[in-house]
Length: 157
Image (cartoon, rainbow, N blue to C red):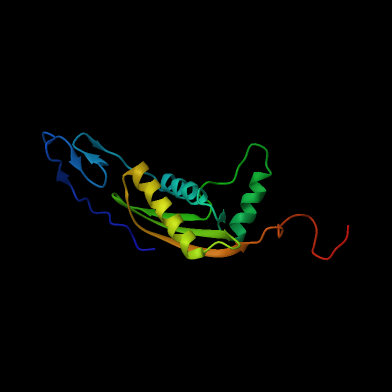
C-alpha cells in the first residue's frame, strides 16, 4: 500500500469571506481541524465492501475463523474492520481489503463495484480523498461447502 499524502493543500474558498479554508473536504478550517482515526475509516471500508452483492466474507482464513468464534460469544459480534487495513493521512487514505467471493461471480466486475462503493462511502463520510483500494481475493465460497458444520465429507453420523 502506498502511503497517503500528509501534506495540506489549503486554499481559500471563493465567496466565503475568507474564514473557511478548504483542505481535503474541509477537514481543516480557520476555526479548527478534524482528524479521522484509522479505525473509523477501517469500519466504513469494511461495511461498504460487505454491501456489495457477491462478497461472501472479508478477511483471510485465520481472521474469518476468529470472527466466527467471536460471533458465538453472547453479546459479541464480528469486527466491521475484519479483513481491512488502512493508512490515513491528513487529507488522504489508502485501503487494502481481503475478500472471499461467492462462486460464479465475475471477480473483475465485483472488484470494480467494491472499489467504487468503498471510495464513495469513505469520501462522502469523511471528506478524505481515497488514493487507492487494493483488493486481494483469497477464497471462493461454494454454497453447501460450509466450514464448521461438525461433519466431515464422506462420514455418516
